[in-house]
Length: 157
Image (cartoon, rainbow, N blue to C red):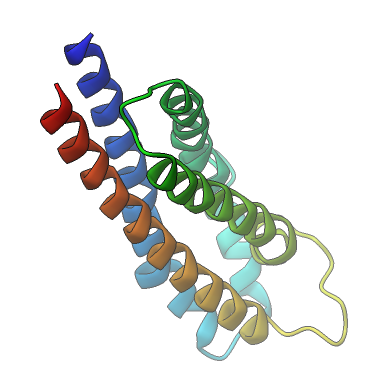
């Protein structure tokens, strides 16, 4: 059983790291392109760039794996409730903020939604940057708690 728990921890840890590096990539590569003065054809270029694949595909699998691992963690008695709640809070905050970014920011930037007149691409990019920064901080907190889980389990077994 000890090996199965470690494998599960490793899978969750890898999934969270995958999401973290995806968010850092967005922060470094995508967002700055929208913070500079915007030309009309830039939106079309980004939409053409994402015609084969979609950024949602990158985040979907690790998110599903993270939820699955959380469900299993709740049945593991060797993990304290405080760590379970903190990790659950981190994962669900991350998922809720990702849902928000995809639907209310990236929909306009990537998916050809019509931009309301009172909203600018710069404002959306700035909003995305701030929410993305919060998502990165929440993920780091979650990863820190993952390290606590590994230490707690290693000491109890």
